[in-house]
Image (cartoon, rainbow, N blue to C red):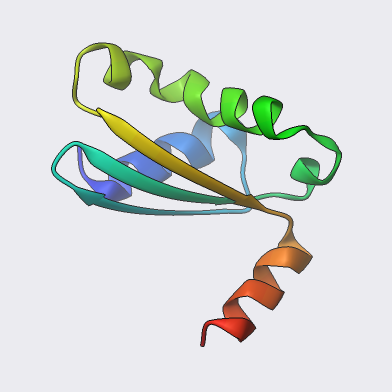
Length: 83
């Protein structure tokens, strides 16, 4: 699975505003952007992202996953800070 495939899967399954995926081997970094994260706990956010990926985690395609979640406003600030 490519990074784009994973981003498309997450966008399609979860209707997220934006998803960025980077990988190195079976280690993945995921940035997910959606305003519903504003009212969710950290655990609930991770559970939401992990659910559509569970098959890929179970079969070893994805071994280590780092997830960062942002609301739309938080993501705008993050991008400005790191530009």
